[in-house]
Amino acid sequence: MENEKGLHKIAKFVLAVRRNYSDEVSFIPVKAFAKKAEFARDYLIQGTKVMVEGEIVTGNYEDKDTGKKIYTTEVYANRIEFAGAKMVDRPPFPEDAEGFLEIPEGMEEEMPFR
Image 1: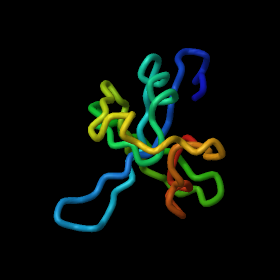
Image 2 (image 1 turned 60 degrees about the vertical axis):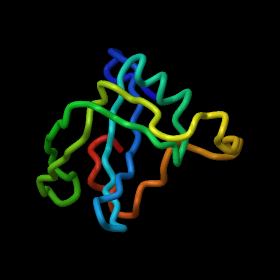
Image 3 (image 1 turned 30 degrees about the vertical axis):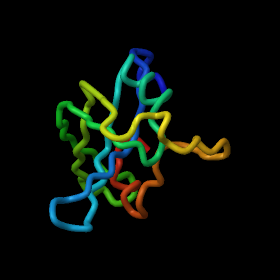
């Protein structure tokens, strides 16, 4: 979690979404702000099933190395709710774990908020 321009607390995480009738998975970057960022920091761990409702935000930036225009899509979370089993039914969070999800190889280069 970080402050962006000193305005708000921001949590950034990637939501893994399985596509219908397929084993393929889409990885959706999500930003949560203020109280929702605190909720994400305090309660979301890798593998937690959640429902995220929010605004789809698109943008672009120029890659510093290639000069190529990179287009981005992310979700600004308006609501985050648990969608799976209760927390008491889950195995304990490993103490040595870091972060939320490992970002698939190559996807990190496309993210403007590295």
